[in-house]
Image (cartoon, rainbow, N blue to C red):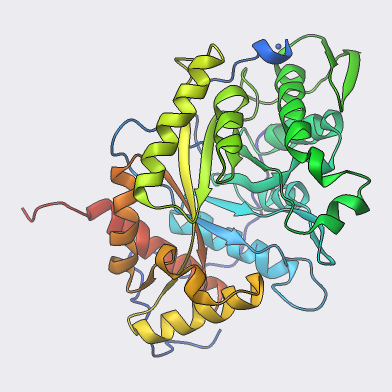
Length: 367
């Protein structure tokens, strides 16, 4: 079923966005044998072979529903409408049950965004599978995929930065990797098989049938997030791709090779994979202002000095940010989830579009 489009008041055209600068311009089907396919339908990322166009996206922050601050739900939906009209490729959102006391349910956020958009890819980045039982997650994802017209991409991760979040859900943090592995197998089977029986260490289900199913015969694409070899193995054995953070272009190239090696070991040598990168960045022609803005936000979020991240964080003009990202494209990255630190939702969308346009022309010789 196609998603419902809710008309909104006319928004400024994004065909030729104004340059962001220091000056303000305005006020504000069994288990392990299940195999997903990359069917190329609209809104989905495309598997990467060499240099291909990227799909920068706009972040919905993890503090979206935090009563103490952050954007309101209405602002998030307006951001999604603007992103849809701008020509950007998608929206992504983080996920936590109680991350140092703050929660953000990715699937609920994306359900709301799906209702006010028709084209945007909807991605969780990343959804904490080990905190949930996979059977209801499979149903929630299938319904969201159906309601959005097949636009859901399930980015999954194991979390663990706040161990209390796991204890609050009755989960031992030491089991989060194994739980995620089992959950991914169960999800794939429930989406693709008529009946699923799975007996694992953490989850066991018997003769379970599930309808509705996702739009694609292969189920919702599952993209694994993480930096470790365990994450790369998880992507190769059970997933449809990998998305990294704090990575160099060299690491991107190495990760692609490792994922394919693990896939071959698991009997999936020809599986089409997608590779992406989540990047904090800030766009402003005043480079010092861009640096101050992103460093302040990141230090507040991670409680670490900005120098710990700076080599992985592009800031400055859109062209400079695009140049940083282009090296990852050359290494095989086909998608960028841009954590854009700007002054307003409109600025986020405009900055994302400027970066996308700069990437599209990067390296071209003048005619």
